[in-house]
Image (cartoon, rainbow over all chains, first blue to last red; front, side):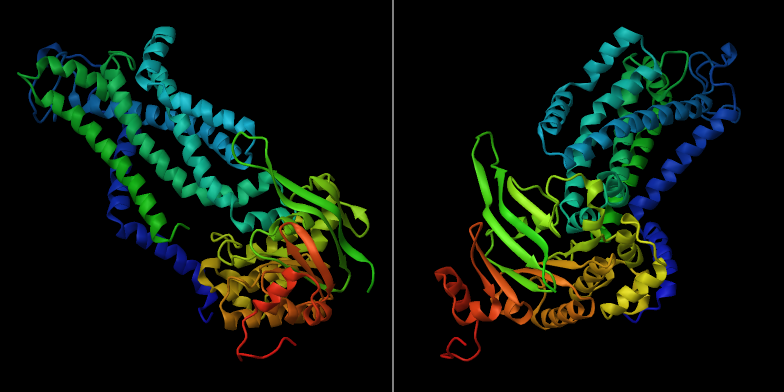
Length: 288
Length: 263
């Protein structure tokens, strides 16, 4: 009670930053994700060479001063293609996670609030969707709409909806069972206001952690689907398509496989670390 | 002084039992109760006797399965939320668990200002928060801190301050001191009883603890398995309980000196 109240605000903000810095998962995750996001942004305006520029004089060249990571079978600069693929990855990961959140979050909160048969129906539908393999869905979409980056977004996005419904629901239930929600109803707050003022701030960190985790899985799924030819179509580059064309040269030019693989591993690692960091920081504060 | 603030008329409440069966669980059966203006009414009963259901019905947070709930002789059960503004301002609640009754992410200022904003009470927010904190004997600096920085007793004071915000005429306390340790409990009880006098409150004090009710309440209603088995002035009920169940409850009050007779 004797704390200097005026300093509390600032001290709390500072300690949040300090805890972030002191948490290795959060810090490393942020740095990796930051670098990848920055690379994606830079690739929009600049890459060392055009990612699609063919140079038949320098096919499958080794690492050199002019081509830092070498070139592929068409003489395209590997570094440029890696950079250009970053934006595909960010696009697919970001959009599919946002899509799943946009649908799963409201459904999850709704089914936590209402315990009637409609929310039972939502949950059972989520179970059915959960049991439907994403790969099968992706092949169906690819057959129906043609293989493209957006097909992958849709397939991954839909596959993640049930995950978000469940995570949101269980987190929201904890909040809705608290007595401060009853108190808010007793002073006349309507459900929407309660969701905005209590539920969303309460489940925010769980949702962010979950989004980050699913982003990392989306990166893997996207690479896999591209590798199978169900997603981003050549000549456009993505880590999955790069890996697919590089496997033909595995014995002669193994490094060509290494770079996109490293990029995938690093990206997945970055987003998983970020997710773990957010959860750890939340736990440190005792679930607040 | 006289007249009813809240009335339950033949109220029953049943819940569907879990599972697919059609059986229902009766929480309250044909309960009639009169909360007289200016009186402190104790509602006593063991766990599972329907006390919390009763509180929710009195707050119109749940609808009765049968019977009516009246506020100042007007029916509130079954009414749309927008018709309940005056009622919401007039009847407020303090809950049992000081840990779960305050949103841990909110500053105390916002916790206390929320009811004012929700109910459209036109006051100077900062000024009102300061006076609310003062009335529950907390320093003004508390407004800038978060709920988790306070002890259980302090949190319960904040919960009381929040309930007093809209200047209610009825305060419902649902096991409001049960989660506190003994010395803090006494402080909160004294605070409640002086607030009842200062703010001219009608108090509904729900508890399983007969000793606490005797300390605080003018009248008492004994709830047993969803029915009211005995009502009366506290002094009468304590002197000569008519029902066997009430006698049992009274006998369960711990005493310090052995062999001391019932007073």
